[in-house]
Image (cartoon, helix red, strand yellow):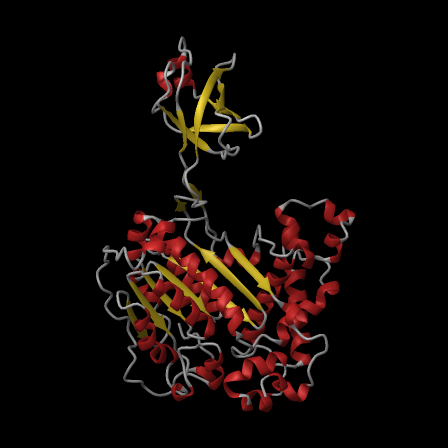
Length: 488
């Protein structure tokens, strides 16, 4: 896939780069427990061994790609392959701290690889250039795409989904003070430990069967906090008098009364028959038996058209109808439709779709800084996309929230290091989740903006012109977003 805008593509060969994926070392399972002790305390040995076998491809070595690569390498995977076909520009050096002005004109991945390798010698770090290696995706467990145009991202995503062993796919971008992450871990992904919390337990004081024999009430000792919640699963041991409960497997907790130290558990029919004639005498431990969760992910194509539930980071940024609790919002309040129609997450999803379309129309270029005409065009694109959306995917009060999309367009070319750090940490965590099944992954997208950081009064257009931004060198993104007087 020839995904990079023409003005960024390499025109000459680079002897440090490979156009084909390098051979990936066989997975290693050894763990330096002294070096990785804190990480092992969080993930556990089994997850750490899974992580040690993971091979990750990260494409797009701008500031965000570099932050993701750093975090994944330090997580101690088996290998990380850096991919890029763009040349280093002075502006890249403002957010990718593994680049210097001496690297300008060289390939971004090749310029990073040596310092990335030094982060963790036990991880194999390599770099490749050329078109996106879509024909070789089976070499990797997880593929992360940064700055990848939509058409190319759709192709790569479908290739990941159709691989013999499904490959996790993550698309992430930072556009000024806005960012978004899309995650697709395949048609069926098993999250073995959704919470990652310590296993809950309680000491049993009494057990009583209800008259129907389909449930039981368990009372726990009063001097310990009851940590179980409705919907948890637990198993019994060391119970005297009701021996059939010991080792009977995971039983669902139906209702927890924390104040009374009491909970109600479901009894399967087979167990109910075994308990007939048995009476509780004493003792017993109740231990959580955490259940894996099956997640079904949709493709990027399906998600773009109908994103479904979206996480709302800051409800104070929702549409006026939501913050005022109008009748129209109350009809959908508490449903997935609320965040899509009235939330900032739904608005940003539409905005990022509009940016994709704008780039397609303009040879891969995003709106320039302080370009009112470009921002107005982006808003019209967003309106057209919204008008053609299915009824359940329409963003409401778009005109009332025009300023947000105009600000998104106005700073879209900026790659700001704080935003890269935030999303680099988020995506790094998603790579670990994809490789281990530990902790609940993003399902399926996450959007965040920090537009409140913009000055109350826009800086003069002269400070954000193409010439001023170019003159700012490595601080071009900061100058373009906030005015060059900020970095003078």
